[in-house]
Length: 179
Length: 190
Image 1 (cartoon, each protein chain N blue to C red):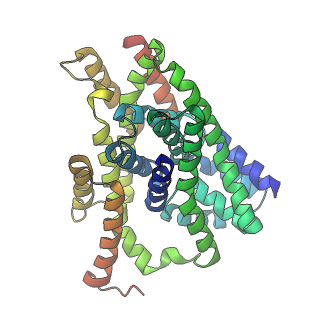
Image 2 (tube, chains in turn purple, brown; image 1 turned 180 degrees about the vertical axis):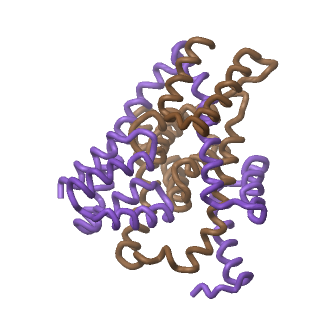
Image 3 (cartoon, rainbow over the protein chains, first blue to last red; image 1 turned 60 degrees about the vertical axis):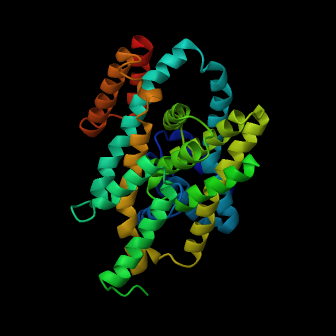
């Protein structure tokens, strides 16, 4: 039971760069070392975790924890997965307040800020490929971005309306039976 | 009161946060900066940078950091800020937790359900729009300076932006190394 916590603590602590960077470590720990699930199960699980809202790595932790030890297992693996982030970020937040006016830190962040914007621009193109953007559906991201950018519409609404729109379109326009 | 708002905001973000960490960043930006004015776009950009350079999922890192900053910016003490980060982090994972438990219990096969596939035909393109919007919203004078204000900083910033984009797209550079390199550029040139 405790090894669920320590395993995911380890995974949370040693992966830098977000959810997808965690996959190789999750695979090594959970499939090869602990043999909690098979490689095929992990692949299925990744597909489910990806199509669920929320944080990818946390979704995987919840699912594996639940499979091994039920609800308590899910709680422990989740806690293990988020605790390193939580503690490290808190330490930085407490520390950064005192140093953000330091001239060197301020300069470093002036260089970092445009870089961050580009780091968000890069996956936009990758995601456009995955989402199979073509000339028939390109208006969806363009309109969505425009509403958020120019009119301050919350991205949450864009997601809700897009999901609902996709469902209604599939149900009534292309005529596939949904239920 | 701010705790209740933080909880509600991050619960919604967790509930509708489809499409991974960056899409979630777009939502956090929309709610926290544009909606509630809990911090400036520049502060938010710094938080994203730190979230990316530290271990763990970006969504958790930024929720923790934003929770702290929102409370402290509103005039709260440090311990109140810590409570803020706990609130935001808990709220952002709660919907996942409930949903994933339900899915493991009942609907492991749900992803092949036609209704789910239909929802995703609308969702996936929208996520692309979310990322584009996050990027456009971050192109502010606070992050890039302006040609009239400080031409030196502005053009270097533009160069950093284009360089990072090319580095990530063409040369597949790791984001962390890129960030560290840009920090060095900032220290040397600004």
